[in-house]
Image (cartoon, rainbow, N blue to C red; front, side):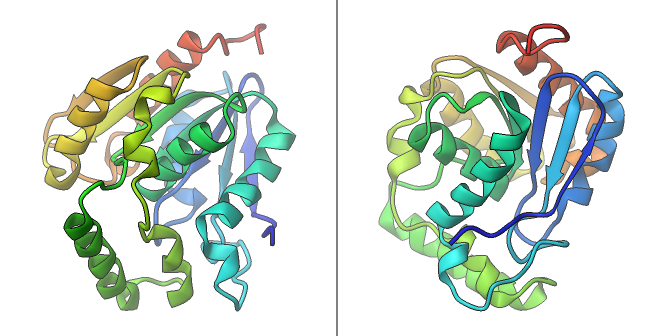
Length: 227
């Protein structure tokens, strides 16, 4: 089942699709979109059950494949794009590149990780997702999207063939090591660590995110007049 996602587009030029993390909405990208100016057509989406996107009552629309299919519908409208994802949104971007190669032209990951290979680490993550659910202003069922059930992404990072930009805060301890690992495994990658930055860099350092978007777009050949 595909959920029609609420999306807001501003600007003209090469497409940039921005996907938030668990418990947020597309509005978290406001500063980044403003920093990019009018050079790109920026589309910020709300994931199912977040922001202004509908919250289906059944669990299936929140499972990974269904969420990716909903993102597909947005990408079909934007055309070739740089995908920018924060946390969960970044993981979904990695998954999309592996399961639908050739659709996303460049990938920017903001405080995101590749998942887990170790079963104990995976269980610990899922337990923390369940514990955090009552504090979030989203339907509890929507947290299903953040649960990890396999090691597909972390096992196949070397297969991601698009330019990737990694952005992580030096104080975001849970993700610093994950980004250093991805830097070693991804074929075409650039990693930047934001001094004193924490998890929500698009809120605190929108210019740094915008700079990475520009660099990845250039590496992907998505610049004005070439999209």
